[in-house]
Length: 191
Image (cartoon, rainbow, N blue to C red; front, top):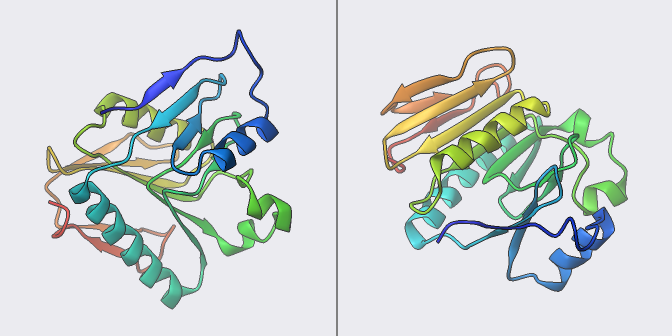
């Protein structure tokens, strides 16, 4: 089952506060909101995709605990992007000094900041073009590095600022480059 998009714009204005309350009142439903205000209802992923996502977050989290350079987020965290969209990447990371610029209230809600790094992991029901659009949206809103990991086709698309998208066929690992110094993600468990 793929995401469902609900256009409420002609009926109600879904303010930031209303969107926050909608998410709080429906904790078992995962929502995103597009820059134009459409509500995106995200279905849960299956066991295999959930396992892969957990592996990514664990690896990123272990690296971050050792490097102590920032903050790691799971797919449950939403971010208010500069274009107005509220998005939840499968994994995200923000440099500590950028995170520290936010107030405690901003950190508790959907932080009004674009992550420095995001991962989107394609599940069996995800539309590839939708994920590519999301990665481009992240890039347009300031991420420095993004990975679209596609286990079905054994490919990874790498998104970087001011560079063409790089597509890798069946890589064994990915480097965090200078954004995540020393981080190497092994893809053995994903492909």
